[in-house]
Image (cartoon, rainbow, N blue to C red; front, side, top):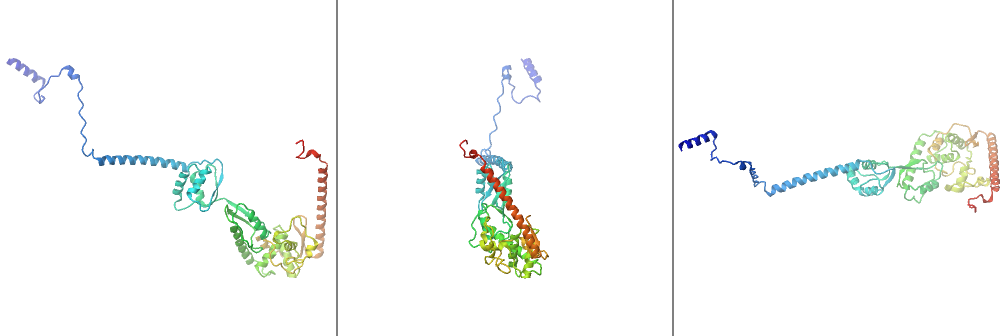
Length: 409
């Protein structure tokens, strides 16, 4: 008995040293039990702090902020790409920004015309680009494929399309008013009272669509005032002209006498020599203005001999010296020609058939030039009559059914 116990003790003692022996009793495990999986340990219990509602709310807020930030970045990137990317226009077009139009109104108009794809993106992007600046009124040329950014920068710069209004030299104030009224790019009415004849400077004036007619008129008056002051200040010292207004009167006559710039100083010298000599100017354009005023002579109305002798305040074949007012609006070159005329001894000139004039110092020489001019005119009239007769003969020989309205058509 003791031996078994000792043997058992010996066995247990060999199986486990006293130092390695478990503190509790050793329970034998059968092979089937040893193969069974052990139970997993239970999860740790959440702390009271983790279960706190404030922490839960803060976690929700943080998640929401991150979500919103991601969405905002995406929206911003999309808007930036659309704002700076190529636009939908497939061809260059014009767009008019009206005076006083707001940003939203402009954006809506751009989208309506297919110039931008999204008016909201345009408005938001424009506000970021403009800051305290604004889009300028005017008509703009928008290139094909222009981005919203490029459109904003163009309208911010104010570099709108400029149209031209041209006043030819030698037109009267009434003719200039008619030209202003017929220009469809201009708006507004003209004043009822016309400025004085000769008060407008013939030039080409640039303007944006929507500019008023009164604005252009004001520009012409101011331009003439400046030009006359400059020309008068640089005039020759021995002119028989007492005032700037007299210079404009004579310049208007020179303007109507010749369209050639190289002839103006010489034509001016003829009239200056005549004034110095006390001779009448004898200018045909003054006859016309005395008869027809600012409306001008009809193109098919010749000057008759009776017109030359008809007394008017402007007929320089009848009156001495200068007429009371200019007979047209002279250009700057005509005024400069009068202010500094050529130094000649010429007293006469007549057309030479080439678009210019033949000048003469004596009446005999002048009469010879006049006779030459009349021969040229007679030959031209003869040639025109022959052409007209040939055209009439050709028309008479045409078949009757050759017209556009014939039955065969």
